[in-house]
Image (cartoon, rainbow, N blue to C red):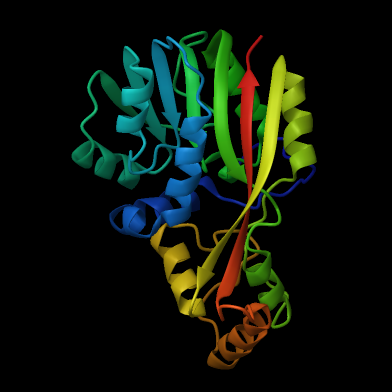
Length: 270
């Protein structure tokens, strides 16, 4: 990835790895994407009453929210964009979108004309963008004056239990890292006239750790960072990891928590 990044000279994510991981997860995604649906519906509730003629679903994934966007906003044209070809293929086959189009593209290099979009909706997608200046430059470029970018994304506290448990076992990076509220807000302020970002913590509960790890694999969001361990993980290390995660089991209901730090943003173009 060639980019000026958020305070780092090295890339954590590889776009080809991201596209391949989510393409592979297209068939299983909707069956395990509980958090993604919850956050996406919350973001839908934040959509303004508008007469947006051209709407973009950025990082559309399986296209789940496309019909909801059409019903709520009734745009003349809905453009669904995703980096993963497999996700787009699934979405086109399973979502009935009138007056819509599907584009395979990168949020940091949008395949759209200048000043061509009224509103961009993006739920839990831009956390895979390390180059925030490129992302915000592109979003600002394609939005018309007064256009809005509504997004949800993940913060660095996400899955801290998973990260902490692995840190007792080895020095590899097992959990994807995401940008902080301050970093996100500071960059947004440079590119948009009005910036509103809110934070929310969501905790999902599991009876067994394998339920969480299976879910992460099913949505394609398991560890795809550059610092991950390659190859198989030894049985003894897996046992040690599971034992370390047990420290987080709740006494009241006996459940294992997985915490997600979610940011909701509304950026208005100048």
